[in-house]
Image (cartoon, rainbow, N blue to C red; front, side, top):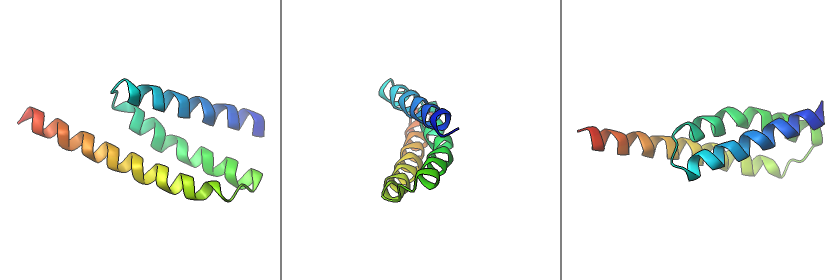
Length: 77
């Protein structure tokens, strides 16, 4: 189970980064949806140091999505 979970989380992280590198908004959503899976990996493997990374990843994804929405509103107005 752990192997499958790490493969899924890694694949989703790569997909999110690829989407964001190509300026695709759904990358932010993939990033946010992937965070609970990473939390499962962290708790299953007791890699508590990664919790700090996950907190920042969530904050960055929320800020990125907010900035994207603001930029979209400015363009449409």
